[in-house]
Image 1 (cartoon, rainbow, N blue to C red):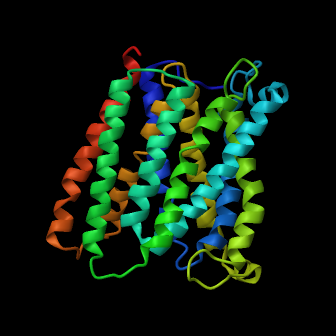
Image 2 (cartoon, helix red, strand yellow):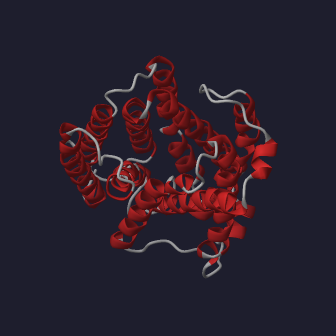
Length: 331
């Protein structure tokens, strides 16, 4: 299997993770107004398909005992359970985040959900496998959380005229944050030890956990949405055009690319799970950049809202740079 042998290559993998996780949602815009609970089925198909493709290619390079198929055959049963659980936890967190955004808006859902997930994920991952300088790692995380808060304030000022009931959305975002921050440590533990799952095998098992959990959970949300939107049916899913399905599948494949890159970084002795997860959460900056520079989300925003974009990006960049050098220094 392919594994980075220099820190520069590992850093590139973490950057790929950040870019992929921050970009996959653009494909949902290409599906038009297709409900997310319908697009999610194709997204899951994309995640599973991509995990298998990466496993049979990068995960099978040079053969050996750690190659994709042999790793799946020889890993301990506990590793499978942990990876499946990680996929299930992520699946629920992802669906809660989308519902929280629809109910309360980005200004509430993102700083609460993603900010809490970042803190929980890094703390738990570092506790499982302490690696690098904690001062640099948590200092960088603090700057990234500050950037997320500034980003949220900018969105709130942009949408100052809207009136949203945030109580339910806030509760969903809190639950999302705890779950979203918990899935990565489960994946990291699944890869621990000589008989653990390698990064490509763990991605595949993780994706199966996502799919198995999506069947009951997303199926229920189709009939009983957490938001005020109308229920949707399988007939509406089948009625969608090929291009609509294709964009949603592509979104899942892009997200899985980020997951593979992040899990490879977490598995590497050069990086560790805490740094890899923290870098991946720079996806919020990437997503904001798409919104500002491509989709024109702030084109008509008030001046103060646009003014906050510069410090937001600077805080993100500073935080990510500090996180990126944390593994180069001792504990």
